[in-house]
Length: 77
Image (cartoon, rainbow, N blue to C red; front, side, top):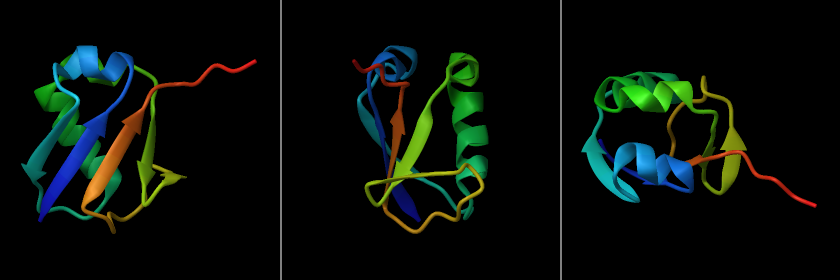
């Protein structure tokens, strides 16, 4: 399955891109993240959340969308 991964904030600096499309045969977000950690080792040291279908989801969630978004921590006030 081809999945678009979008990166925001400091995650674009770590990966060197705002988005990419990868071919990924697995079904759980944590497996996708493990593959990204191999491709971008510094990503493993960063805190971020994952969104799918415009909703934040746990890493053990099954992939049900063609787009996954990695979001850095937000600060508000």
